[in-house]
Image 1: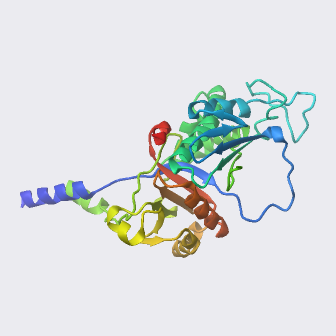
Image 2: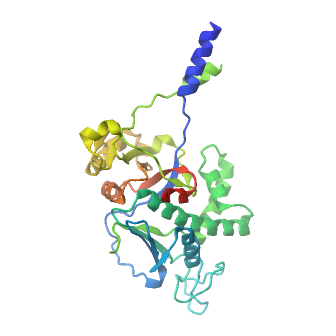
Image 3: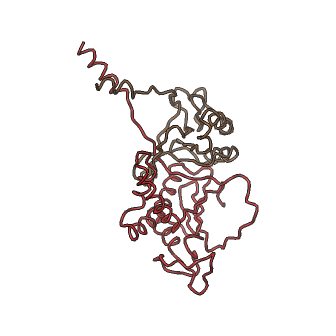
Length: 196
Length: 135
């Protein structure tokens, strides 16, 4: 009896796979174009283009994958708008630590990263590029979360998204997560085709 | 005790993969916690035993059938209708795509998803160093 139970135990042990999937979350743009045309300044767009050989063109400069994160961070964290030019809808970025170059993005709220790929680009390369861009946002958000709450944003977000976290902790985290997200909103678009 | 534990948690897979499906690596990832809110779409090259019948071009797999990127929309609508009413607006589509696939098929799938207004997607990956994808 005992050895049969033991055999069964081994069988179920081997067949069980407890797997949780993980990956990069994205929102697709809705298919109907918005009613109002939004004018976006050229300097507020950071265009990342991946061609079919896996070469990366970021803001008209060829870059290596390893350097992509730094250039995205430099773009997002630039805060080029000066205090005198700032308005209600286009505020001055007082927490940015970038170069404040007037020819790059105004503030993180306006900064848009646009990723384009060729039909023949390898999926693996595309994911690596996406990973670096998401990583750039996470690095900046972690920095601000460390400054404000002395902990990492990614850790707070994981805890908030985990259904096992007690609701009172989640309530408390919700506000903090939202605040950090608003400091560096993820404005990251994936368009269909690459520019030749 | 242990026996009963494993007996209850074991789930038999309902679909076997007919395609190569080595996911790419990434490390800035988020977990897909709530399984009941996820619809899976697989894509990759058919494995060797199916190559004779289906060729070596990247194919989409929905449940256990090969499909075209164009059929994804209808599949999503059918799967969405099966879910509970309150979950229908919060579904995520998990794209499990082989890392050697071309972006073309993914662009087609994304277009289909946009047509059926299923905008939340998750590029499902392994947890690992993204630079290894380049090899």
